[in-house]
Image 1 (cartoon, rainbow, N blue to C red):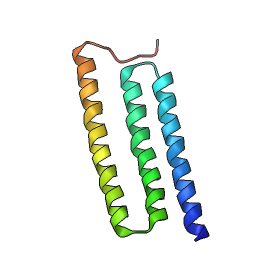
Image 2 (image 1 turned 45 degrees about the vertical axis):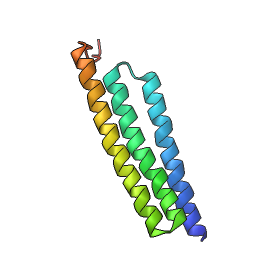
Image 3 (image 1 turned 60 degrees about the horizontal axis):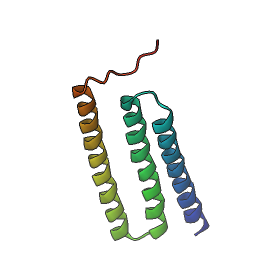
Image 4 (image 1 turned 120 degrees about the horizontal axis):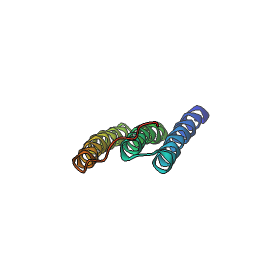
Length: 100
């Protein structure tokens, strides 16, 4: 019981750290392309760790399958929306940032 709680809390904490990293990337990176990269990577990994922790805590196979399904849908939606936003930025002739 204690081991399950430790694994769950650790996983959720790691997920929250990834979410915070994504937020900092959106606020600090210089252009839309870098921001999209930081946001999608952090969201996919952060949500994966949080849902893993929740799945370990629940222990119910039906709940774990639902959480996996939710994570897969979010990964697909995140990749699709990131691609569409980047394509729109390219069509608007927004150049990627280059170090001067």
